[in-house]
Image (tube, rainbow, N blue to C red):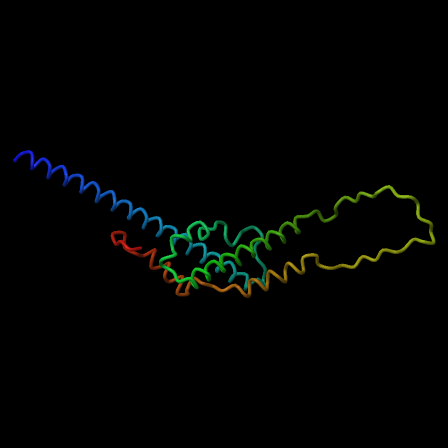
Length: 184
């Protein structure tokens, strides 16, 4: 009889340890998903705020800060495949892609503005040119970054904000899901 009680007690202990291990696994998985959703929402909100502050690129962007300093979406997209529709995943991916492109354009403008104003001139050694064949050089002033500025404004105007869309709402639900509930 004691032997049977020992077996039952040991199996109960093994079952309890197994249950706790499974519970901890799913809880950690849910916590990771909630934290990723929280970071993604923060990135989206911040980028949208920066785009809005620039009046969709019309006022210009701060050259000292990026719209997306980090990209948690590309690292954690796999966590949300079951929660989001394909169109919602595409919408978020498109937002991140355009925001990253805006960051690249801002970087190019910043690099251009940081070039020396009067770069040193290195004149190649040439043969003297006869006076009759000398031509006048006419320097026309134009903005070398005009195309970049134009693309920046166009991209800023066409980026779709997503924080308050159904995709953003689903991410908010994931963030606010109770820790003790499974099925994230």
